[in-house]
Length: 264
Image (cartoon, rainbow, N blue to C red):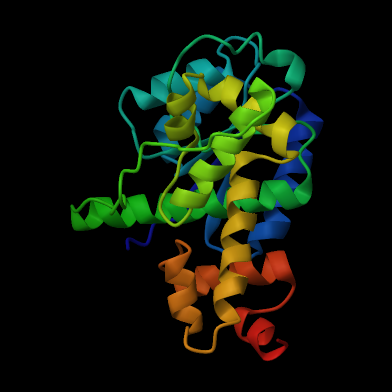
């Protein structure tokens, strides 16, 4: 990979929100991460900094004066399909953000962000950004895995119960590959924004948090089998980088994969 720092751009028109979010990310990343945190006070400034700094990750408040976070994302997507976008929003803003656009956001986080959820989503964003950066430098495509497009859940009960069962089964079938919000939303005929709203209501956490916790749960199951190595367990649940797998596992479970296995 190149030597340029990975940039994370935070755009929020509330100074306190930007400050708190910046401090939380500083805590997550540490002083030796090599990541640069860039703050923007509105959508126009966010676009300006994007063109100057080319951050790999953008965390955008949906509603900002001038250009909204959604409008910023649309403009970024005109020339850049690789930047990883995370939205900050509140439930009462979903109607405002309901228009059917596709910006391929990684996730939509409810303000104020819970620290654990923020860390999970930003870690995943950085992983994806680094993969995309490496792919550009090597001029090869990132493997996408199998393209499994069907869900077979036939749950009884209300439409909400059937929808929740479909989502759960789809994740169970596809968690080991790069699974996106857009993909599942498309299956249900929803916009990304609306899907994230009903996902949070149904599962009590963001999509990426749920997916990460599910992957680590499956890794624990594999680690209880003596014949599977730590590296093999990580790869089996979607983590090709064993160091990143260990980092995420330790944050979720409080121990490394090897320590977890030793305690079984």
